[in-house]
Length: 316
Image 1 (cartoon, rainbow, N blue to C red):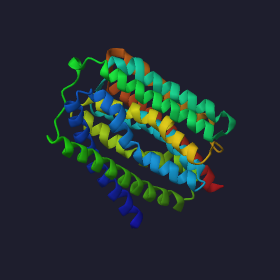
Image 2: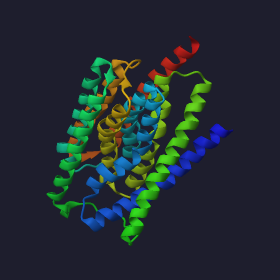
Image 3: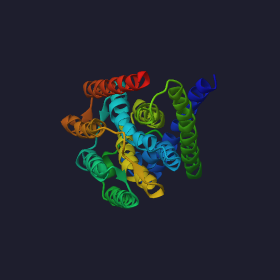
Image 4: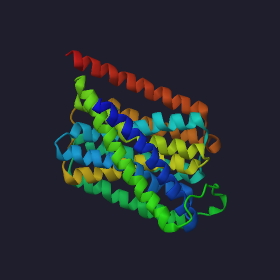
């Protein structure tokens, strides 16, 4: 009963938090003259990734590297396969040319860097510093790119609170609710998985990954329904970049992260999904329902594989 309440209550809090974050962030974008795309790639993306950060650091300190690393790998797979897939099915997503030329390639390079650093079986303190350095470089690059971007073609977005301080309050409350709701959802889901004897790695790749990605799902779907495509896709791509460079960087600096228990397939799926959305987005600068269905089917196939693995381990 408590597990069910934790999962349901967490989802409700996530939904309310996502609504507050999107409203506050879009209003700030309008007032500061920053494009919605940059807001989606930074404030919204980092805010929706806050649960991943909290869960990964907590798991690393507890010595649960499987959950910590699986959370990031699984979340990046979920963000593209499940969340982008569902969002595009609900409403086709328009993609800005700078997203195709800049941010998606950066996400692909970040994924390759992550896999390369983990080839020795561990993300060390030095690896963490490298990842955080690239994260800082990406933020600086995004800031100057935003200043040089012509906002004339920016999409019209719905205004939220007119008071700037109230907008900032919406963002703060939204992020807080996303963190709290995400952790509540994850705790309930992990407890449920442990009842069935599922391994730590599988829990990280599935239950925890989906749970901590719920903010991205709710936020992207809400943004898409409001016609805010820049925030919808910027949230997903930005979250994936932040998950690798920011969350794994911080986690590795706090405590070394072991890569034991993970298969090459997990990294291949993560990298393949990051790569495949480049031609999807390039064609007509939109990700339509057909592409969304393809991403969703790919994710469901991977999920079925993981469930079969979990079933095998439970039997053993």
